[in-house]
Image (cartoon, rainbow, N blue to C red; front, side, top):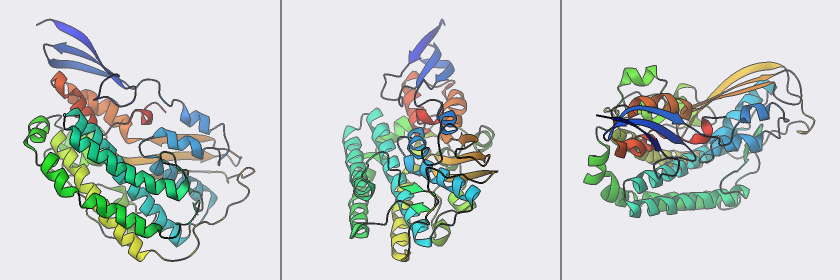
Length: 365
């Protein structure tokens, strides 16, 4: 058959941000795929090397718009390690709660996009509504719904307001009570199985070889989670499971996302029950004149998309000398996606991309 070149996205429901893919197709089968992450939130690593330590916080949030809190956390951890800053115990618990809330709302956003793509609009509306409930909590906590700038070196910006724990619990119960509805309308829906099972399959060895992390890696049966491997914040104080599946397809990846949300809810309840009293911020020197001691470090956290790492170098000045992020979407959106699209149907491009949990700003940093 005649091979044609087809431009898929960015003006497509299955694409994220201004991401596009150039496809070489024979009929409706993809022969070759070339990903183009576009120009979105570019050059942040170099911008961070030109601004002071405190000025970088509004920048790191933009690298992942959907879940900025993990970006804040990994940056705060790197600065704390370089500067030798201790974090109060209560602040570590608060950080963990905030990060798990971020994971839940990020997964709900992903479920909104994925169910919309498959035409299950009712489920998409539920997911966006429940995500908004979590964003209401963030707005009360720090004044922002999308960008929070709440986690920073030495702890967090402020303590929970009065009655905030109860409002967290109420919100999570509201979401949790809807799990049977999500299961009947989406996860146990035959349409979801027919569209996702056997689509975008990757095996365990290939996933490791290509640098897959997060749901992509856990969907092939690999129990790898930075919260377990290298616990940070208060993750060593609570017990939780790492959900896995075995088939390595889009169906398995979305089921892992569903199970992770449930684990996050249980984890938050445990953290709130065990949370100690005390300070939430170990004050640092004047942040506008602050000079971090010379050194280099690498830290990593488990974001909602998988392992998120940060390599940072300080030359003893008032700004970072070198900043480099290791983001999940870089491998998922460029290396893995191009491989999974070979031989796939045009109708499954968005299916494979969204199940791989790609977010465009993480790629062209």
